[in-house]
Image (cartoon, rainbow, N blue to C red; front, side, top):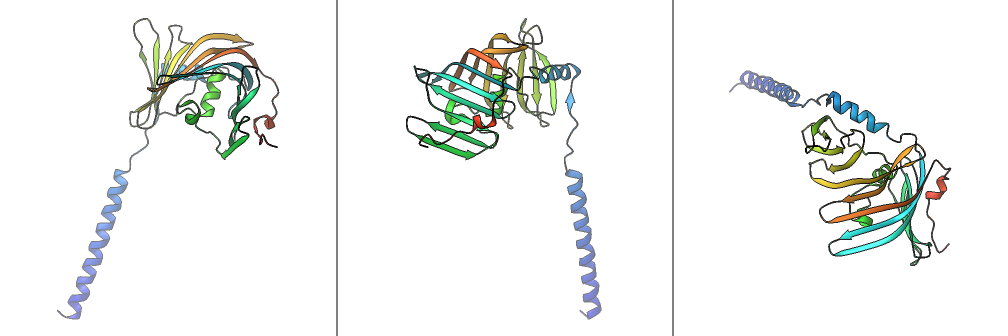
Length: 263
């Protein structure tokens, strides 16, 4: 093979390689999935708007009540007191029979704290929205818990929203889905179409996370607050019974920063 034939062969392979690369890039561009526009029915849009405005002006709160945790054959009962500020600040104190704090946890929007006054220990970690599974055995985050304590309804980020009938005489269900069609949340509304009786949350793969039930709705100032909240999954149930509840009071940001009990 002479030098001319070699150069001709190289040019041919260079052209062939360029064509292959061009085809590959064209194919890739053609296979890139487009993010669909949100598919939200008119009825679902109305319900979402109603849920968004629920207790919207409630920004600070505090309360006292009794928590019960069922896990397997065990049951634990403890008194709780809490303060909070929407959307990310929450402090919960565990009380003994005398009403004194024996420990608790707090989130200030940047850090998560846990303290034991009996053991004189403080735990602190950087986390703006910590999960509370190690405390109540259910994968609920502080911002979601704040929403529940203020009578708001957490709404999962979604692409598809539709309303379907519940069982006969039991209202409607607002179903929120991902762009792949996986259910992210189901919100159950009573026949009055304004009262939420329960909701169910799922992870990104559509696997069940936990269920929330609301009972004993009570008017506090201009707000509707559930005085009985139950959160459960297949293994655990956490129930909070609220005795007293206050709203719209000034709370210093320092109140959510826990300090070393030995200092």
